[in-house]
Structure formats: C-alpha cells, structure tokens
Image (cartoon, rainbow, N blue to C red; front, side, top):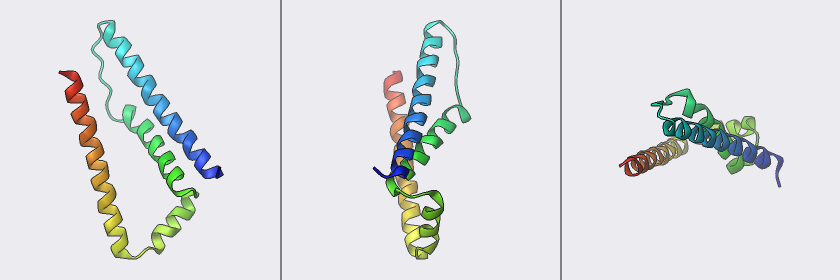
Length: 105
C-alpha cells in the first residue's frame, strides 16, 4: 500500500476516534444529568483531521504534489470541482443535521 494512503488512513482513524471519544464522553455526562454542549473546535478539529486523511487516501500523494496538480488544472475545471465538492459537503452536513434531528425526537 502506498505510504501516503496509509498515512491518510491513520489521520482518518485518529479523527474518527477523537469524534467517537467525544460522543462517548458527552453521552456519559448526559446520563449523569449534566447538560453539556460542544461547539466549534470540539467537532471541527477531529473532522478536519479526518478530512485531511480522506484527501491523502483519495490522492495517494503529499499535499505539495496535490497542490501542484490543482494549480496546473484549467480554471473551468477548478470551478466545476469546487462547486461539486461544496455541494457534496453541503449534502453531508444536511444529512448529519437530519440524522441528529431524527434521533433526538
């Protein structure tokens, strides 16, 4: 296996593990009667680490090489990919919110 993909899998595992730990801790605190909310960096940092891992797995290349490929791409392709990734991210966030609302009722 490519060393960059293996490194990406480690990043993804770390991000997912920290998110799972947050969920377990806050569920335990909620069971103890505490009303605790986590916002911002509490979810953002592990999520960003997992996304960095996903990019490394998908590209199998270091970020410097991925950046060079991106900069060499035609402008219209960057626009199409950019909107596509934004749409995918929006759909993911909406799915997470819908799941949260469904499970909290």
